[in-house]
Length: 572
Image (cartoon, rainbow, N blue to C red; front, side, top):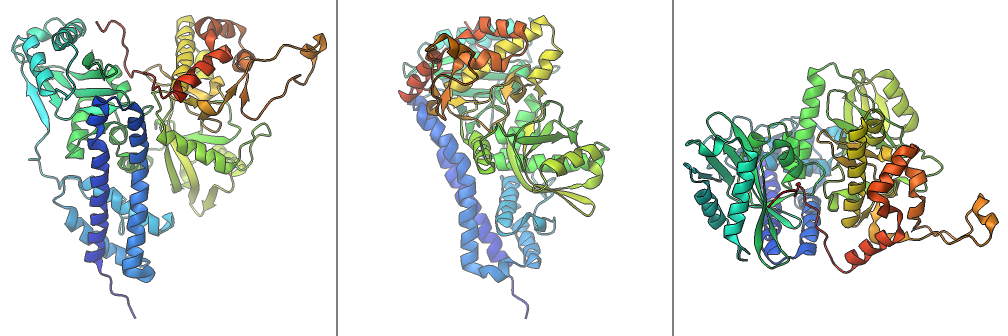
């Protein structure tokens, strides 16, 4: 006896659950302005973590409700899900967040089935939205035309984007931003009668900052425009900086930063606008940057599958020193690495598999302050065996046989993370000139300090665990030993009791599991004596326990330390 599939009702319940998720997502997001105005910095961090966790929570609620309403037998039928998908397509056709609703459907489906059941007939492996969205969707853009009077336009923008908290000195802010624009744009631009400024109608919020995002353009050229706004410890609002360089704006939207809070009625249209001003940014990264990280994951997977189907590229082991916990492979022409946990760790590592997973998941929920690479976690990825370099596949099967398995003509990767590929810092330094070495080591120290300011201690700070991005920024990417800074016990090495102590193979003092001795950093971090000396000159305070303890005291006192995602030199 065949089961009757109530496909319309199931599709409607899945969509209703999506609406509930979207409502709760908006509720968290829409409070961003109030949190910013009231300087509730710790609440901002909590809200960011809460919004990330919300998706998984809502998917599990939806799954359990479906099981309760329709029973396991109906939901277990793959044939039934083909009908459910067709009904669902009809129900989302008029929506303006339809691409997100497809990803939601996939998430609910995957919560009910193993990933072996993935197929385009019963879920949205490929999107059905292309070409279906109308072209008359209203863009939430405000347009300004200076017509030779840039001051007046900036004055109007400052009025259109007012807060309930007053400006400290709006006239001074306008003059500052105008000065920055004139300094950084070609001379003729501000005189062009066709000069136009477009800004997205909603402000973007993250950490202690608010941002106006848009572009400046003439008929022949365009520049991205971000106006950064700060609330000076509740003294009032201040326009802090105008950023028009594409690389600098790209860093603000970097994969190394927490997600923005922004009111977005039509996600795809906003992403299209962002792509217009940041054409080199992947669509996956843009969706992720505004909090739709599951959509970012979907877009990444689709681009990966398309890349594999259209190139002869093969997976190889990633360049660099082999990890003691993780094995890393990559596609030479694709800007991503794939990281999986080895079955056996180096004897010097005391963590276990479960701890490593927890550490990597922790990164999703903390403020990455531009210094930690975002990750996406995947289960049961299938790739053609022919897409693997034989030496790469042999190594993966050797170090992680419980994770990597050959099934016929396919390679099954049961669990992995993806990260943006960077040049390992140790390799970068080997090929750098003196100025590049100086800049990289300075930024390496700043990365450690900014992570610490965000209550993150990297643990293993070896050069090989940091990478250099295409913008020259140093970023941490190996998370198996990270911890909250406030959990670490920083100590000075006690003086030797006797002269013989200094020559002993064992320490003459007790060492607890969370004890760290910053005095030991130089010999662990640098083999190159010249680099060791240079780093001491740049960031010698990192070698003092007192530096770390002062930060701990500030964090425990509730202080959220400023870490700006843009250069603040010469902002006046």
